[in-house]
Structure formats: C-alpha cells, structure tokens
Amino acid sequence: MAFSNGVKEFVDGTHIHGFRDGHLLIASGAPGAGLDAQVVRRVATVDLAFAETCERDDTSDDEPTYPS
Image 1 (cartoon, rainbow, N blue to C red):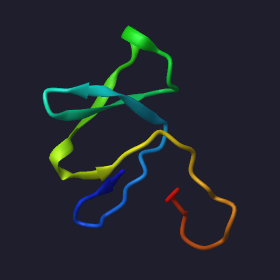
Image 2 (tube, rainbow, N blue to C red):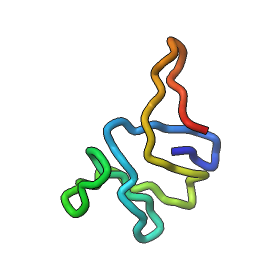
Image 3 (tube, rainbow, N blue to C red):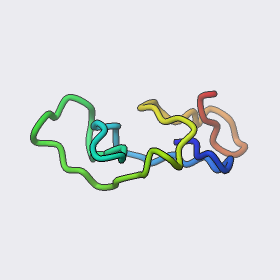
Image 4 (spheres, rainbow, N blue to C red):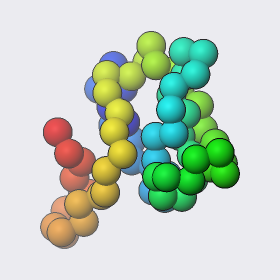
C-alpha cells in the first residue's frame, strides 16, 4: 500500500479482498478464498494513494523494493 503521506507498507501473506464502506479490506492467505477469506485489516481509502496485491521483490541485499 502507498499512503497519501508518502509512506509505503507491504503486508506479507495477505491480499486485497475488496472495498466496503470507504475501507480497503485486507485478508489473509492467497487471493481466491472468496467467502472463506479472513479480513485482518481495514484501511481507510481516503488515506491511500494506491494499493495492489503483489509479491515482494527480495532479490537485492538492500531494503526490500516495492512495485511502482
């Protein structure tokens, strides 16, 4: 997730489950769990610049990178 204040956050082992009541729903596990997905976090969309389900790029020895 990239927040409108410039902060970026990667939440391992989760995926974007959907959008409800002005919040982005983040669920555990892989995408495709449907009704069995467990929502582990709600993020106010007003605070987000963007969010996507992707895999972390740990190919370098530096800080983890995020898709742009």
